[in-house]
Image 1: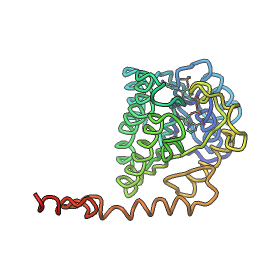
Image 2 (image 1 turned 180 degrees about the vertical axis):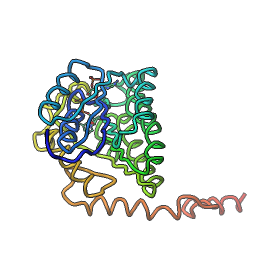
Image 3 (image 1 turned 90 degrees about the vertical axis):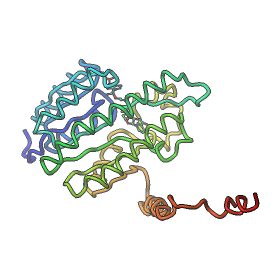
Image 4 (image 1 turned 180 degrees about the horizontal axis):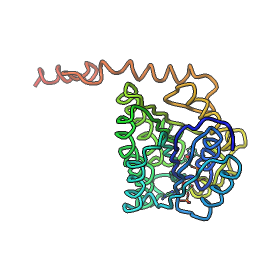
Length: 272
Ligand SMILES: NC(=O)c1ccc[n+]([C@@H]2O[C@H](COP(=O)([O-])OP(=O)(O)OC[C@H]3O[C@@H](n4cnc5c(N)ncnc54)[C@H](OP(=O)(O)O)[C@@H]3O)[C@@H](O)[C@H]2O)c1
């Protein structure tokens, strides 16, 4: 058992492998007890045993398919009722690499159910509890595809844009209530994600693929630094800040009573 101070319980979805399993290990070392969620019980048990042996932290297993309504509501209930929870890591997610015309719409719907609906429902389950307790954190695993939807399947990019937007909105609404929200935008990360998406990671250029351990360590450093949006590979944060400033600069002109002059709508109406 380490001497690290107890930080409460972290719930991590998609913790049986990849990025989620890495978060589980890192957060236990940081002093969190864990509730790990995924479908594969055997993998979760292996992870729990290893983490408990190495850190002394308690690891509870919740086997759930988050695209199944009943299972999802069971996990929501855990979030609503366990007052020891201080952190939710919404990590479970599915990718797709095929372009729209080659993708099956039912597969796209299943991806939306996991990447968007499950993440939203779990956020709705925990956010009021965090507000009532005056604190808590939500880490949402998005993707660089959330700001660059051209690079993989567009529906995948769309689901991750949703995660980025929701996180920005959570920050806007909840920061003054003591609740922190961070969206992590990993680039290509060496996990099974790529096999499931139909594009083995070995086919990608080495120089664009990060190890999951490095990715999660950078994301947690971004969390410690108070970032709302963390792009683990981005060398200069000023690049993101310029992008964000350009977005903010649009705000005063996004809703006005008259169409923009370049559309010549008023002139056309007068000419009629
Ligand atoms: N790898 C990358 O290059 C990359 C880049 C950017 C963003 N991301 C994002 O990072 C997150 C984690 O991905 P990863 O790379 O770690 O992928 P991964 O290795 O495939 O892991 C996905 C995790 O989600 C769980 N999961 C999948 N479907 C589930 C369901 N229906 N219900 C509950 N759990 C489910 C899986 O466990 P079970 O099979 O046991 O359920 C597994 O633990 C995803 O949101 C992904 O979009 C990944």
